[in-house]
Image (cartoon, rainbow, N blue to C red; front, side, top):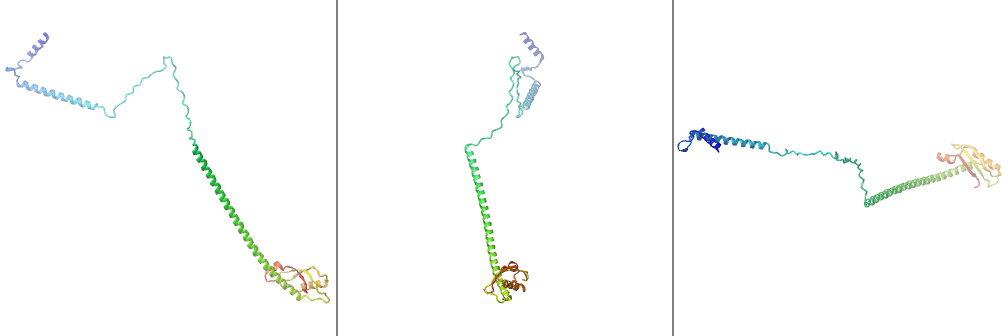
Length: 254
């Protein structure tokens, strides 16, 4: 209590003449108080601005958060008497098994394979039939050609034979013209003669194949053949085929 009184007395002694008559302060005192108030207000505003600026700089912006992870190291089994578990080795992964087709899929696959084999067999059968048909047509063509050729050859042979027979009658008439009947020969004699001729009809050899039984008659025929060349056909092919060697029957009375 005494301390408070001493402070009050001291303050009063420190401001002598602070109040004028009537209890009012002088103007200088009022102006000094107003300036102090302005300074206080300005300082307060500066402080507020500073605090606001600092608070804005330290405001958490998106992306600035940091996650703090708290970890505690625990030593298991140490001092507890329990064995430390050993991790089991990882089992090798089995390769994925192919999905087995169901019964319907297997049946469809079997049916597809059956149809494919059937199509291949049908195609092979058609190829075989076509091959046989080609061979049959070729064989028929060859036979027809051979028959045609045979007919042509037969026709040519027949024509040659007819020409040869016709020319043989010419030779026999020429032989009859040359032959002279020996006196005293009986009638009805005949002999078979073989004559080998040269390219121009010259007589190279005469052979009595079957005699008449009368030597004079047979020899007279040989003499008639050897007198001069016999007439040959103009067709060289016909002459070479039929008239290089002739076998004929000579019967003057026929």
